[in-house]
Picture 1 (cartoon, rainbow, N blue to C red):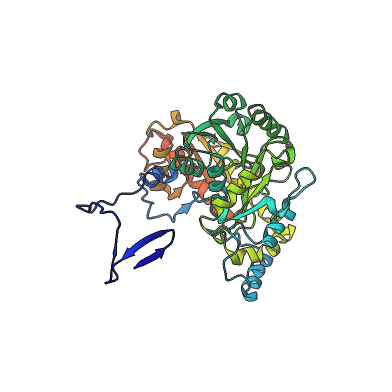
Picture 2: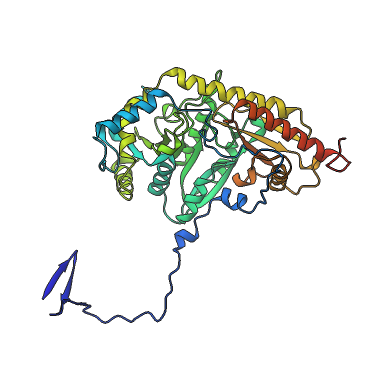
Length: 439
């Protein structure tokens, strides 16, 4: 008897058992090992934080200024229109099944309409919906790069770029951001890193972890570098709408007609719903450099996990129509908290906070000469938890030592309290007397 199974044919004996046409050697013992990809996957933040001894002071409640999730403290709820859009999508019972792997056409059109502008027009076919912005970044790197290629990544920068690239056998080259220039990119350094295997330049604007926002002029200079060397750009623009009043920053695509750009974004930050896992890639390719091949490659890659959450897709049009006052209130709060933090820490000897212009972070430099008891930023932030129960992320996690990152989404009274504790910590560290005494 012959049984057809998939593309193969197996012979079955009268007892119904399968037997191979060719005898195979039997394994002598169990030997199940993780794949090279699994072994090569490492999140630098986890590598740093998991090695820290984090034992908070039992006399002081913990204030975590380390997690880039605006929902943690409950003081930044999303807008009622956003919640209602999701409720309506659920109640319609239209979105309980699988969506196309790239997203419903109607939902892609809603995103295209929201971000399209005369300088960078978008249609539904230019949008791929993803499971959060992190999957958008994963797809963008995966479609542009082969093992042995290299990508240019900002330093300090979001750790996920390295996590994804190294797991895929892609080399990461770090280009410096300059703290003395409000974290502008070092263009000379960036350009010096490019070679014939450079397949992608990542630009994060506004920045995680810096909270910086590039000017139109600076973005144009970055585009000029990419254009000269024919390197496509992955624009991580998840914070694109979180820019403080008095500061503007256009999308990269709106400034370029020649450099092809994959812009990655999502609902997580502006709409304050990171757990809803909705992101997107906007394909900007007016000179048809990506052509059909990159687009088709993105479609194929999106088919690996059957697309983003169907219910949130069904709610997208309503979510994107949240009132401007909701956005304005969020941005106003973030700027106010950033200003409080900057003002409070600017007068602390040994610390140099750098005022952000957007996103939800603030970076603080540590003059280690003021704190001889600590080797580096990891030691410093570990002791800050032990003595003051304030947890800030050491910037070594972003490959930028002797800084730490503060998340400014906490309630205002906790921001003030945390800064007071950081001040006290630094003051006691500078004392020549034992830490238990006042100077």
